[in-house]
Length: 405
Image (tube, rainbow, N blue to C red; front, side, top):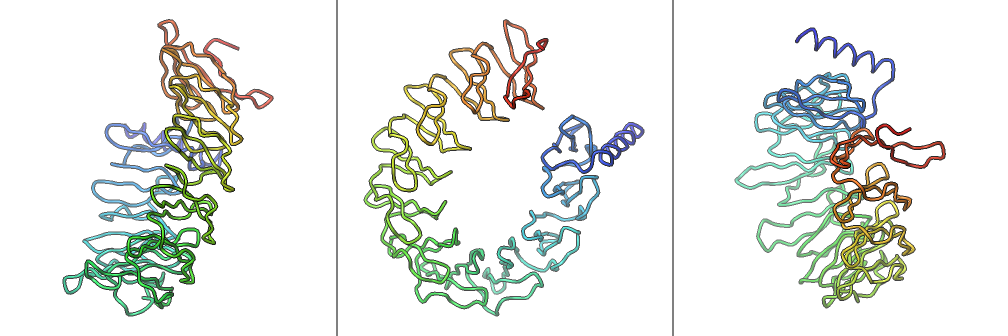
């Protein structure tokens, strides 16, 4: 067993040195004898299965567990953050929270404890500052430190958010009726107004609530949209979903109602389009409020890479943003896209479609297994065969069955 593991490690080292570092997305976890390791996209073992738990690589490192301790390894399987912590967070702005013996601090990607483990709780760095907590006098208090472990001021807060755009919300006192306000990185209030609810900033705006109504402030503390809506949601793609008298609409960052509240249902914008509904039919609007896709579908999904799944009379298909049905609703079931293809089901048969609207293989298979490395198993006439996804010289995706040329 030892010789086999040595040979595996040697092969992995040769592969790394000859081909360069393997991209994060090509290293996958695998399990062997109850432990975890890493393989490349060709099923070669790169890091033997020696971990109790292993996560995918991100930015060249991966979080792992040995016994009950956590740390980080590099793509050679070497621990760069010692595997000795009771828990360890993900890296944000080059720092990760670390827990040992009920105390929190921060480590860098080199494994150095850059902020001592001395806090009751610690949170991710955001905008150069991190929220930390203490539990003196029977209460949990919050304050903020910089990356040198220096507090921004001497204040202790009863609650606080994350710094975004140089500001964050704080809870004024410890009572259930406590109000909220906002401070900058110096700990100074940016507004004289207090709110019943406060949220982190997103796209330069923060959602606030006062007397049961929602509105927005900007990073200077100005009330761009006075609290007047029954419900509002954080900005997304420059637009915020609002509700008034049980009707949905959208406003821009100047507070202008680009889409007055007139829909029974609406969803956030995605790829410049938003799902809307009136009665029992769905469609899409663009950011000018124009119904780019008429409200005629029974169900729709948001756009993803230019395509949206739609359902009409129990059949599924896809549309593009101009409303054209690039794949007419005709299938009983459609899978998620994988490498620009998806399986579809019509009756009891499976086939395949491409994102460009082509039906690559009409439904003819009785069963199908998930893709792995551009290969999948399908059942045809009671026999399992292998199919392969390839791209021809013209850049067109095609699927070939085992034995075909």
